[in-house]
Image 1 (cartoon, rainbow, N blue to C red):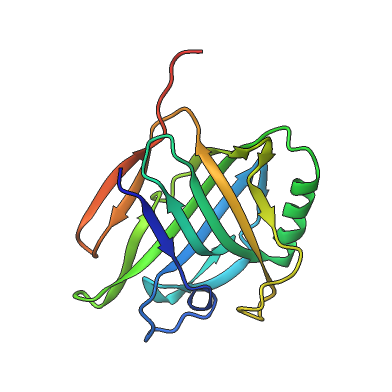
Image 2 (image 1 turned 90 degrees about the vertical axis):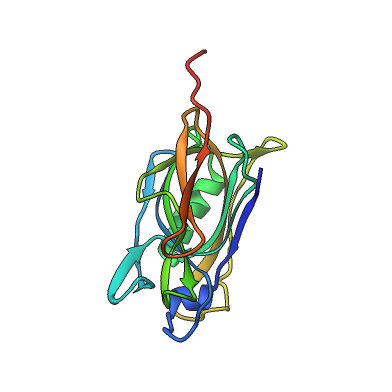
Length: 191
């Protein structure tokens, strides 16, 4: 399977400049173990510079090995209030490890001269579970702020997400007009 890895600019994500043509990523929403993290950061939408978008975090990297059961790894920066919520989650027992999430990765089309959605889940909640490695959950939040963008105050958050037992669609594009989909997750009817 072909893998996908998108390294995005945190600076461009927070302080969008129309003359920059680099990848930009937005974590639009996420619910972890039944707790919805607030979309409390406002940034410029790459596809419509007149619109501001409220989101949970600015993505620095998202990757997927390409297999149906392979996890998605998301690294992003979140607000101070979300950092506190995630610290509490990290240091307490998460009885529920289910995750719902929506993300958008934007790339620049050199021919059409505009940004387009290069990787996303079409504003539909991705359904996953926090990945475990050696008994530990792959959920981490920095204790200190990331100095890459000094304002607003932001903190690095990383999570590994395994798909729940249901086939889901991940949307890809290599230009504004050339699009395709791949399946993430496998539907299981047995117990």
